[in-house]
Image 1 (cartoon, rainbow, N blue to C red):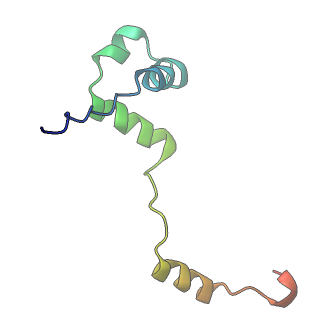
Image 2 (tube, rainbow, N blue to C red; image 1 turned 45 degrees about the horizontal axis):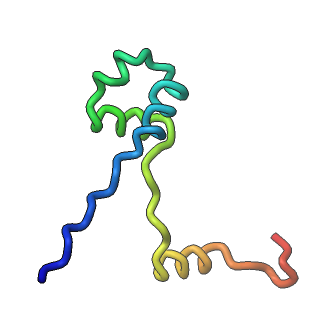
Length: 74
């Protein structure tokens, strides 16, 4: 017997509508006419590019460039 197919993640329509209609203040017809890449571009315009977490090498380089001072003073 094979495993049942995995359900695909659902698109967050409520969040997308809150962003498009609320934050962007788009009229409904303009929001529903947008493509997903256009909605993503609008989000990037407001929130900027998604950042990636530091890996250990990047954290070590940052700590070396900006070491803590004794006693926690900055």
